[in-house]
Length: 566
Ligand code: FAD
Ligand code: MLT
Ligand code: ZN
Image (cartoon, rainbow, N blue to C red; front, side, top):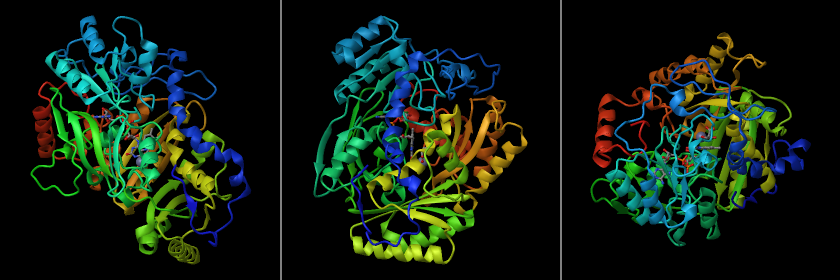
């Protein structure tokens, strides 16, 4: 987290943060949330084989983590999706291939070799995804340390028809970051150098494997900020962020990767190095090919370096957390925030009561407000002038309280409280899957209808016998949260186990619902494997055909991240 100074010492707080909120237990929350991703992987070898499931549906998954029970092993994606067949054109990796890679990479730590030995324990972290829902069967992980090495790997794989799966921090939420069958994982983790930072322009040039948090820390040294922030920042890589066109928590303020990325270097499937590492803000010289790699999800090349514009870091940051009585009031609050906070508004996040209850249940942490409210919002302001920000925020708070738009709320008084308030929002992802598994739907929906989907989904599960308080029911709860400022809803079905009946109850209904309202079935997470079958709900046949032509042009052998959305 950036160093945050309280901007408004004399701010008339809506209500003092309650005593529980100030307890030290809260302080550790944020820090604990991140390393947990790795901890889960480290214990993968201790997992037990899951009981076989009875289903043969297109996506039936093995039971997942259960509280107070040993973790079960993740069912291979190839079994969960029996309709997916390994492409017989692809060669299986041999000892001879591994010898080539070892000589090329020249270091034991640069390769995990599951061909010449049993390396299943070491491979697990690269085969299994963050949600513990998808599991590939790779036998080889390559960790190059230079663009030239990536280029030679790709040329060899292309010449030999070896399929590959580019991988960053493996925090993706749509099953795109792990193989389906035996695709070679090319993990960018060792390409983690920051090459330059221009303190005048704010332009950062760095390897794709730099962890997002480290990129932001580097930018912070000279008073800049990486223009993307998300809950996985301690694990995800900036190359992965670009490949997924990640949106995150501050898109409302800094815009998307499509605008902030100035240039990139990528290796094409045949080994060609595409050097488009421009540092220019303006460059109208023909097609802007780098845009194809932003959000391309590793299907046409491997991003090896990026050049990105980092804005000035705001010295004055405030965070407020509100309780509201209806979604109508949430919309009113958003309108007022835009109107009154305008250029200093840097986040406007929505959380429903159920998402906060689940967060509380999963972490044991008390919530900031004593009374319960149907909705909560987190607002962040970032500005350069403390007095100016205070005045604006005060006026805004007086207005929303006076007009009874907001029922209750707290404003953070110090950095710890800022982080604790953010944890209530960022911690939902982890809480969503804490009790076993989660079905995630990341959707763009016009704001007036955004929350209708959560209500309708909840009703659906209340009536279909799949949701309840005991182990007999797969579904614990339906929760809604997301980036209100970007019309981006995260609809999550928190489950005790992955179960085909749950998936059938919601898909493709949810995508039809979104398509009818001209929304998008993927606002920011991408399509990966999870939404492969559903792209037609958001893209026309013409658009899909054009995408396939581009894929064919860049990757005629189809070796890049096969079986995924394209
Ligand atoms: P991975 O998960 O490793 O890969 C993701 C995809 O990109 C895969 O298809 C992979 O093949 C490809 N890829 C990775 N690196 C490269 C590369 N160098 N070249 C080419 N292709 C590559 N997403 C959001 O948009 N907003 C959020 O707020 C957000 N919050 C999250 C919070 C949590 C707790 C978690 C676990 C995930 C969250 N995500 C969010 C999802 C995820 O998209 C981001 O975490 C991140 O952008 C993925 O980066 P990664 O390095 O982990 O990529
Ligand atoms: C978020 O906004 O928290 C992320 O996109 C991750 C998630 O959907 O849980
Ligand atoms: Zn999100």
